[in-house]
Image (cartoon, rainbow, N blue to C red; front, side, top):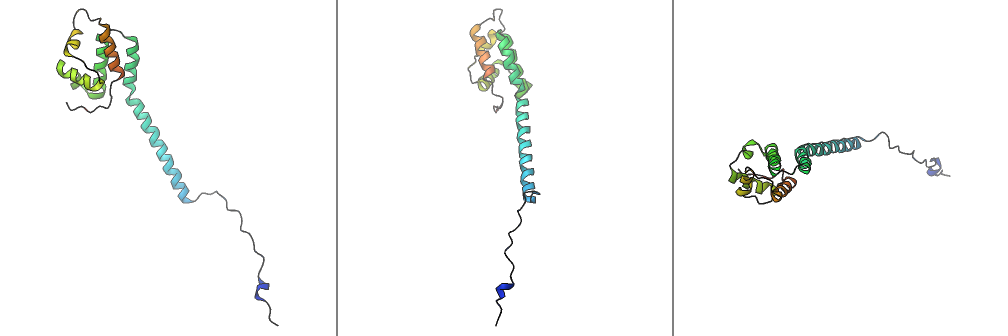
Length: 144
């Protein structure tokens, strides 16, 4: 009589539990890329925060100041900080155009020239300059 070849087989042995540690090299690459992306995002947020520091300070100064001449000086300082000295030293007509572009408001030459008169306590002009500081665009492209 012939013997059954299946009789020589052993019972089925269940495989051992597969551990999650140590991680496969692919997971290390994914973790490294996520870490680099996180550091890049934190760095970009920090740079944006630092870039807008001057505007935050100007808004803070704006809350304490009521003189239109002082508010105008704060605006000029903002323009120097973000766009350079050449824009802050423009003639009145071009300066009005620059202010209009950067603030979204409409300034006239007469309003700017009134700052240098003996009576420069115009409340409406103070509010307009105050609004211009709050709405100042720090990344507006200027073709001047």
